[in-house]
Amino acid sequence: MSDAVRINNPSATGEVRAHGAHVTAWTPAGGDPVLWLSPLADLSLGSAIRGGVPVCFPWFGNGPGDAYEPKHGFARNATWTVVERTDECVRLRLTDADVADLPGRDRWPHAFTLELAVCFGTDLLIELTCTNSGDTPFSYGNALHSYFAVDDVRQTTVAGLGGASYRDKVSGGSDVQDGPIRFTGETDRVYESVADAVVDDGTRRIMIIKTGSADTVVWNPWQDKAAKMSDVPDDAWPHLVCIEAANAPGHEITLAPGASHALSQRIKVPERSAQPS
Image 1 (cartoon, rainbow, N blue to C red):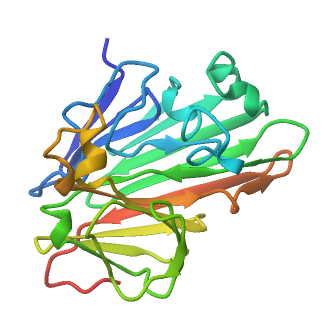
Image 2 (cartoon, rainbow, N blue to C red; image 1 turned 135 degrees about the vertical axis):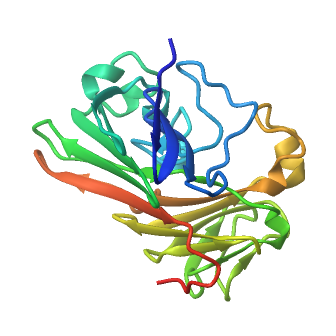
């Protein structure tokens, strides 16, 4: 039985899966797919899906000290419960009881409730809320690891992050962004920025408006790394770029018992004649 919840309304079509609370498709009415999903993605339960919008929790990457497994935490490998569905929106839930036997749970043994609300319309709204349901404080990292479809990443720019400091995970160094981001090789950068971003591939713009996020991650594997990835076709890397709302290592969220924090992205595809707001 498929775990996919499909939405089809006058404004958009879309899909989110109980597996990982993973948004795998969003197409505004009359437009092209905005999210990139690998044709080789493993959709089986317990696997990490390549593309769409994976949920990273309770750590980003390999977490503090680069020492945690699985990469990006256990939430994207878990089976969430669909608790509400309308013609536009789906709400899913995951609790500590649902992940007791998952790899990595022993590294982060806290009581929690996660909810992901996703609304498919003219815009795509995704909100991830974490509540501390235990009796002691805890810290965690997270991200909405969004993959966007672009015509050619070599002709694509990302505006909005000019002046932001970033950590370059490819070179191991750090720098400050000068103007729009342009892609000339493997890119894996963590920008310290709460700013919104605009992806422009010359054909359309994609605006990513975020809240509850200290960092923005920008990623493309380029040719050599993509060739080593079993779930990415060798010729697919020019057609994807990740722009991720994140709270990466060093910017973890700390919650007191009973407290909550929401991380959200609103994704828009404005007309070419419209100016970014």
